[in-house]
Image (spheres, protein in one colour):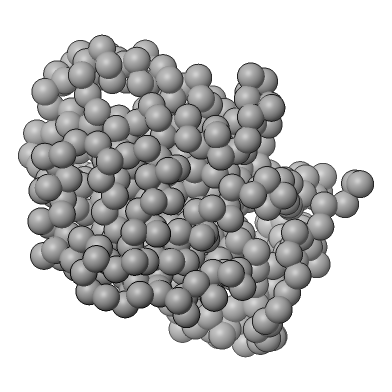
Length: 456
Ligand code: F0G
């Protein structure tokens, strides 16, 4: 069959609220041209994030009812721990309310002044938590990964030679761990190959540095390995995921992505001493070790979600439907980061609006235009999110200016996506009207969330 259908039926629905273009023009102005300030009721199709926006299955909802809300030693914790241990093989499984809580705990233990944490590309909260601890977050993505036009299978791969040079330069004693983000969200949702994970593992062995995965989208990464790395073609996604984790000493996880839940996460590791420290911080900041800031019912939903996400009918539909979105836009000439990643479409704003210089936030201008035209909310991943102003007041741009349209799991159907394609194509046809923007307000960390912008 050519048509890949959604591998689920819909049991419960939520109405969408329609607005007019002139209403949205006003709403955007009130929102300081930052869709993070919009009310979701004013958004028709919300592609701001695939995080925590999942539709849970009827089995997950049933498990929620069955949660054991005990403060300590909850049965729901042990169900969760079993699933995570079976998947990852790690000894210590520490639940947290979401991914950044796991990051905060990890880096408050092992970060600090003078330390460096390499990654293929740090996600913004990971970078912020590292830098908040006083350490430095450094990225080692291959050049191919930074080139939106280049088609390649594993554009999330770490640049090994540069990583080795860096370790030699700063000294292994200043690198408490190396991370790999699967899939590489900030670099276009691109997968990391098993060969690359193994190569990073070898570097870690040589220098005796632990390896951690940022595992948010581990299942999508595993499925890409199955599709693109020939020796894995006949292995199950579950098996591939297990092998990915087997090369690591621990992971941080936001279960709001491939955990298929609306909130939840965990920190997992093999090191006993680090785990003890982490649990102590957990108790101060999140909650007791068997719930970590979550209702116990959330742990039940997470346990099932981590299992459901590895269903290959689901993964096939997930990866193929994202690719379909990308194919239609590419056919219309819309410049995208290619190939499409797992969880999102990334528009290359530098080519979409080449007349807007990077310090005038071309990505944010595209984000606003897509909302104004069709009520679709997307997110800038470029100069607004990662740009910095140096001591001389000069804008330091990141390598790419992207607009992310992230697809919530099991939420929208193909006709919703067809509508999005139409809207984006129409904005593209009128791209010459897009205007640059200037910042009116920025916070010291993670400025994109609360930034206020004005058209120039
Ligand atoms: N790491 C990656 C790769 C992420 O994509 C995210 C979240 C986190 C860590 C932090 O997890 O939100 O549970 O605290 N990404 C969301 C997104 C916010 O929209 O991509 P969290």
